[in-house]
Image (cartoon, rainbow, N blue to C red; front, side):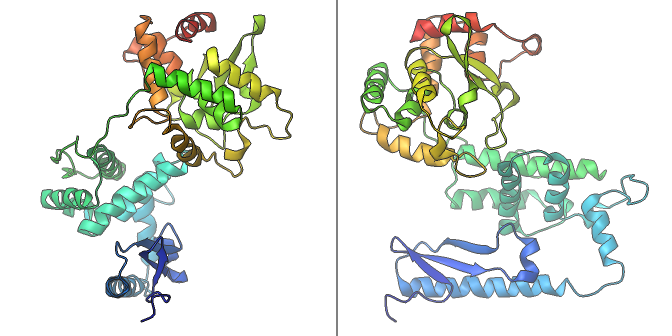
Length: 393
């Protein structure tokens, strides 16, 4: 076999073989993408050919199973309507559906139909991906058919995938949310086997290090020296502790000039960039290098309404691209393990160092403040926040 010709159902990227197969048009509704593609984890054409053939055979068998379920059956469309919607089409009263009629893939549909309204694409993908992992490991079973052995097998499959403990926690949480919600919606009694599964939550986790003061000063001086839009973004994050996506998705109108000439950033959700939590909506006074960055952004005469147009060329802010580019640039100036997110950790430490009250720190950073009382009122005024931001810049 010539090394320049890839085996059937494969392609080569950076010397590594990948499996790739288009999903038949009549089965695309079962998938979230029109093509299946993943790494075969080998550079050997022979190994790739064997693995690709095995994967293709498994897909052919499964697709035959899916097609066989599409055979005409009187009233089948009505059964699926009840199972997916969980309500009577006429009375809108939850239909009497037994647990044996609801499989996990349908539970995902119920969950996303109700809980996914108005949520981001990542919310939908997280639910589909997490439950897809369960189906890969244990099969698409009825909710009450899953056992603790299945949950443990699911855990082992996640470990085999190389997921860190924190990622496994998120995946398990999503699976529990989907199964519990679907059971509640349909009035099912369910002892959820995905609860209380043991695994090492610290496995594979890496600490996100704050950027030290000397490295912070060096980075900020380099930002002034280079003075371009990428460095404005770094400077803005470095002296506010904003999440990178929050800053990258800002418009020029999000920079507000207040009385007295001060500037603050108005962080609000946009159609192209959602916020992580409701508490992330906030106003942040800009001082130090963050103010310098805002002044440079506002001084630009461009037709774009975005503060950082290069990361807003599509319907969504490309924060991942910003993260990759800026973290690569930062490596030369910060200790190993420090990233753009480290500025957020640094800001919390800097505010602690000047004995800033914890609830003010939370308001500046958009962190959740514990306690019912903190949900009352509008928070601290900008002048109070500015006083503390001046103290650390």
